[in-house]
Figure (cartoon, helix red, strand yellow):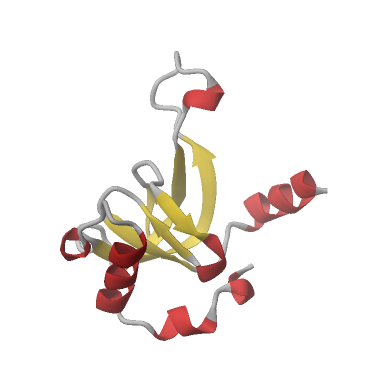
Length: 117
């Protein structure tokens, strides 16, 4: 899946990605975004509120982050709710952070490919 990431995105700086996202999504202030890469990632439903039905739960990203200003490299984390994603470009935006998608979790990828069938 990481092979589908648009090659030009890999060459963009964090500032260029933030500006691109700010141009695409007018409600984003590109000056307030943090940047990180996430490896061994998967999309999941946030289960913070067990009383919410599944269709009302926000999607989050879970994986190991690198280059995040507040987390140690390799830290396993769950993000805040995914706000936007440019999946083919390999970029996911949460409330405050732009994540560059690295390699997905192989178990999630297997489930995803089976589920599409």
